[in-house]
Image 1 (cartoon, rainbow, N blue to C red):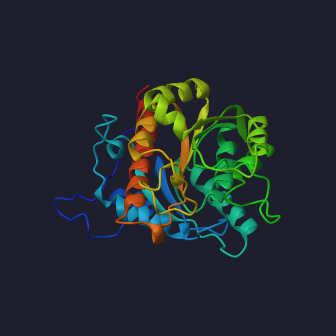
Image 2 (cartoon, rainbow, N blue to C red; image 1 turned 30 degrees about the horizontal axis):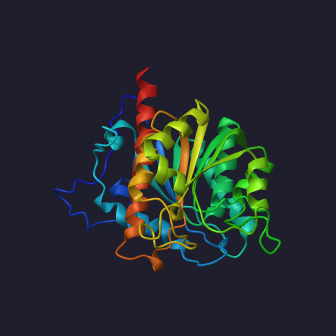
Image 3 (cartoon, helix red, strand yellow; image 1 turned 30 degrees about the vertical axis):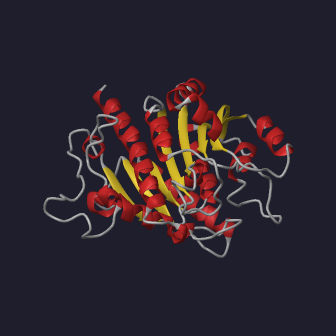
Length: 322
């Protein structure tokens, strides 16, 4: 979309009730209806890399359904993201559920194609395995990127049952492949038991800093966001959000829940505090609706994606105005 074109926004809810019509993200147009997008919302219905409860393959569409209630003005960021930039739903990337390595290659190729149009990606998972091919693709555009990883878990383990690609290994692979800027890596929201203290030692050697969920509780969202902004600086930033960074009270519908997590309010406030960072793409993963109650998890995930989309849209509009 050129700077002179008016973005096509969501379906008008005064004419079509929110519960009617196709469930695209935030009731936005499909990518094929607008030609190209500044921000492409894309689903990856893949969960063959999970180590416990499956079901995240249905997460993307659950988030889309919950996003019907999102409205076009975001008062927390004082922005109308869908008027600032063209945001469109790019549908799903169809990945082989029976062959993880092939699926990883398919996701990377599809992300390459979308990013090649100039779009930024807002990806709806799917399990956390998908973060690796997405990071590979983003790094082709920007070089090694800063990473903020919101999660109950480190996801820097080496293998499960000899498999190198699982939802617990993507960020170790990413460090090994040199696609992350190891001066600006942070986990946020981690908690719970580990296999051993060596897990933390290995993680630190890779360059990760850790902000636990207890740190967020004690220090508050504003202080945490300020610390993260300082660590990231002006580097190109990728944000990867496992919905299990939230406490099971706020996100029961996920594959590996851990007690003692962040509230949805804390997560959203931290993200809003990162609005000045150079966010080049993001994902929200591990929503497993079969374990959800009253769409609690899907609603939290849809609002999370909305805040991330708003940040990207604002930055696109600001860059065009210069």
